[in-house]
Image 1 (cartoon, rainbow, N blue to C red):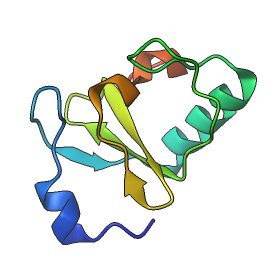
Image 2 (image 1 turned 120 degrees about the vertical axis):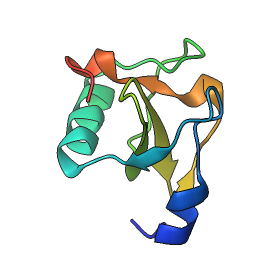
Image 3 (image 1 turned 180 degrees about the horizontal axis):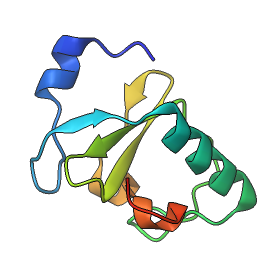
Image 4 (image 1 turned 90 degrees about the vertical axis):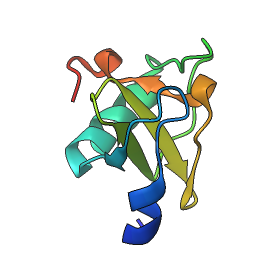
Length: 89
């Protein structure tokens, strides 16, 4: 993941403006496995069918924003509720 620490410091959730942090490898692996199984929907209600390279997790752990091709997708409707992974992180 090539997001710079300076960029991470200024990124925030587009919904509630709380800080974001990089998802750990276990979260990304669990998410990609669930995407492959077809069990993940984004906040917009659409099925997520493309694996993520990384993720940015909201401070409360409830929402993960995908990172694809080193680009954070910080759109509210693209957020993924982490509860879908079995446990909020």
